[in-house]
Image (cartoon, rainbow, N blue to C red; front, top):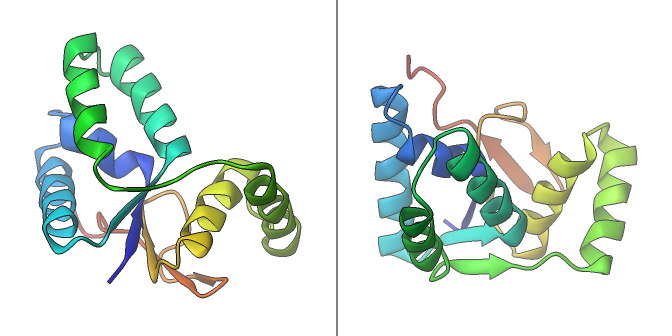
Amino acid sequence: MRSLIDTNVLVYADSGDEPQRQRVAIDLIKAHREAGTAVLAVQVLQEFTQVALRKLGLPPALVRQRLAFYGRFELVPTSPELIERAVDLHVLHGLAFYDALIVQAAISAGCAQLLGEDLQDGRLIGGVHIVNPFAGAA
């Protein structure tokens, strides 16, 4: 099932301070990559890069390796049209704008689900199911 993977999944894959979430994230990324069902928004790559460099303190060379790997996923670019539709989601569903942008990227890519922990697990927005893959992971 085509799934947009949110930033926190990528971050947990490289964060060793929560090993259960790290394992979930790595397994999820691997499974979707192998199945050809992984979708990323360019916004997710930008956010991941910021967190990887600043909070995780990953070396720039490693961040570049991760970007090269994630760049092989299907990517949804940010465009004026995507932003306009995200504004509509923001208004209609009361989402924070950047969350609305991620949801709109999933909708635009025809994803069945958005995998991340920042939105309400189980919610359906524009035909996309919000799934928190870390629910239950301590």
